[in-house]
Image 1 (cartoon, rainbow, N blue to C red):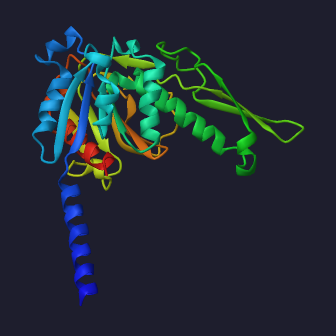
Image 2 (image 1 turned 90 degrees about the vertical axis):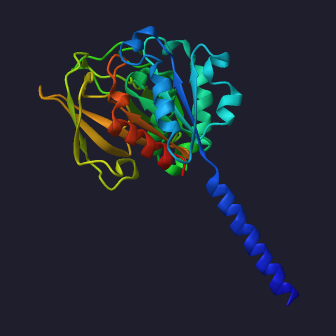
Length: 302
């Protein structure tokens, strides 16, 4: 009888622990460079708008940080209290140095953090470093498993260099070439991704979002096709590693298309890129883009 009571008590303790754990909110940090131009559409800055909109959703604890905060908004203390990092940057995001981006990527790879990069954050330091890390993973996977530990990986800078858009005729990046030495060792030359695309147009014309994977948790509650009233246009090809899932595709009446909702696995974590935006258009006052962010936060934090 005593053993039964002890076992029953242990079960109750475990159930209680699971209930308490389930009640803990998902900790979200919204990073924003807060450039003055945003105030054309966001009187209190874009990041604060996203944080307010998500902060009223049940089960989310949301903090807004900025480039001018202590530690540029990404101190160890902030990151220690973050499950999902949402990043908006444009003209000032180059002030975040590569080592800082690598710190974030290390947390993603360890499963301590997931990243959501929005719109022009395709050239943010954390996204660039995440794409570099994924490019390395992809290149080494092409080397036979038995030879991987001895492989020599040489990293070549993006061409064109970062912060310069590629032409339509530019070779896609990342790109890897392989050579096997006489001793059987593989040498891998990896051209890192440029993380940009050949064309953009900030004219505020509408776009149509096509939900390509309606059963994905990020697409939960979203229509198969929906419209963003005012946005900037980006056109493929996007120079990034092949994503694991493309949840959304965006189209314009003038014929351009873009993979506007992409997911990459990175170590034990994930990266989600969501394209709609521009700081002078109020995209993140619209309910459907905000629903995408809410769904993404909940799924990434699982």
